[in-house]
Image 1 (cartoon, one colour):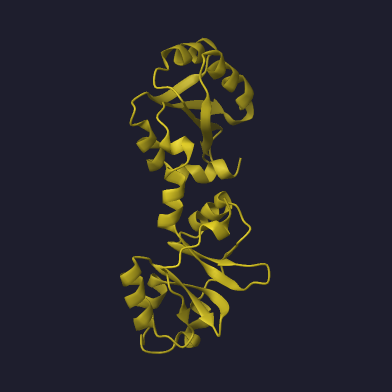
Image 2 (cartoon, one colour):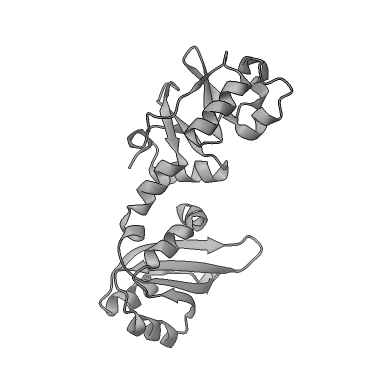
Length: 220
């Protein structure tokens, strides 16, 4: 799924002649803390609520405060995972989408991204979640996948969580079954460290709560 397919038409863009007061009002109306600013249709950047609140004069036009605008955006041909990474890296509630000629096409909201991710099989399908602790240098997915598949189970998705100051990593695996006792036994026989597992039918809810961890998966 590409960025151009995720654009929503209910988030307005500010003009450089608009004021900080109007920006705050629109942010409140549309439940976002960021809005993009255009000048005669040309994209200038993203304005944040915190930057608006720092202004001494909320009635001054935004053109007087171009230094506050963050020129962040995604291209309409970028994949949803790249969009998610940009949103996470810059802590945005919306991100502008530009075409190949840098013309503004519209915006994607954090809410829209979450709805799409929640509908993906890895989050939406019933199944168990297994979290393994591994040494970073020892990580290989193929032998783990083989163990799971030998037990008549399919992997719906995986992602990795790690910390810069650690030699350990967590591999989170979503499978298409809730009865995973045979899988756990096989993993333990092969001396894998099973840190967490959830075999309840509601386990997909746990995966949605780990949204920040998805960012690490995108970098694998």
